[in-house]
Length: 358
Image 1 (cartoon, rainbow, N blue to C red):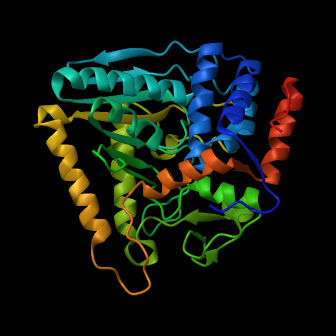
Image 2: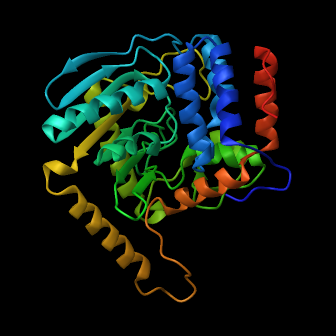
C-alpha cells in the first residue's frame, strides 16, 4: 500500500516501543507487553495494516471496559500426543496464539504433526504471524480462526452468521523466500475495510453489498452491508462453504464461539468473545530430507515466476512475495500511519500519560 502525502512514518523499533509502553500502561506485565508489541508492530511492518497498531485504540477500550484479561492464566485443558486444547482465560490473542504455536512446534518434533485449538482467546492480528512461526524449525505452519465479528451471511441469506474466518499457510523454501498464504474467506478482510475508512478511501466494488444486493463502497457505512464471500456474486457459495468449515475447525471443535455466539468486538467492549483459533505444525523431516524438500520448493517457485505471462503482466508472484517486499520497503522507509489513526494513537498516549508515537 503506497504512503499517502499526509501520512507520517515511524520506524519498527519506535512503533514497537510505543505499543509496549501503552500495553504496560494498560496493565499487562512487562514480558507480555513486549510479546504483544512485537507481534502488533510486525503486522504493520509486513503490510497487515488492519491488524497492527490500528487496533490499539480498540484494545485499550476493551481493556478499560474489562473485555480483556490483562493477567490471564493460559493453560492446557486437554492434551494428547499430537493435539492440545488451550484455554486463553480471555487473554490477548497474541499471547494465546504464540503459546499455541510453541506447543504445536514442540509436539511436532516428536509426532511429525501437531494440532492445537484455543478457546477463550481474542483477536490476535494477522493469521500469517502464527503460521510462519514453525518455519524457523523446518516445519510447515497452518492457521485457522473464527473472526471477531460476523459480516457474512450464509449464501443466499441475510442473517450475519459467519465472519471472515481466515486461513494461513507457511511453507519453507531454500534460497527463495518462504511461501506464505494469508487470506480471509471473504473477498476482503474486514480489517481492510477499517483501514480504508481510516485513510479516507472508498472500497472497490465487489467487497461489500447492502441488504438489497447493491454495491457498497463507503467503508464508513460498512455496518449497513455485508462482505461478499470468496467467489463474489457468481461463485460465493465456495467462499461461504470454506468460511463455515474453517469456523467449525477453529471454533466449534475447540469449544469456542461460532455462528450466533460470535461477539462483535467492534461494538461490544466488555463481553468475553471466546474467540476460537487453531494452529497446526507439520515437521518436514517426518516425510523426508528437509534440504531436498526446500530445493523442490525453490524449483517450483522459479518455474512459476519464469512461466509465460499474459500480455501486460510484468511479474508472476507466489503467495507472500508482496508481504516480503513490503517488509523490506518499510524497514527502509518507515511504517506509514494515517492521520486519523495518529489522532487515535495520540488520544491513547494522552489517556495513559505516555509520550506520543511521534
